[in-house]
Length: 122
Image (tube, rainbow, N blue to C red):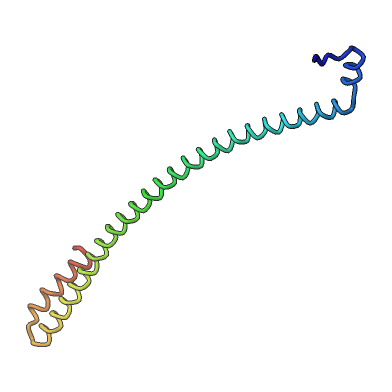
């Protein structure tokens, strides 16, 4: 059985509100699908960019941590040297005081000169 419409029925169907509403809904659905497809591509691109930024940030953080660690090592060595120097100077001053108490002025003078050289760098 053939379902052929005559020309008047086709014109009525084409002009009907039902067909017009159906076409509008199809067009809206197609637009929404296109938006979602485009949004999916944008989301994928943003996800990729985010991953790249996270990797770069991780590398930067590691570099900063390494720099801080090496700076701490250097400052610790400098601080250790300064502490050792201060300790040596204090011990020498105590030795100079002991030498002067025992009457060994010559030794006290030599020790004080050594302390002055360490402190002032003559």
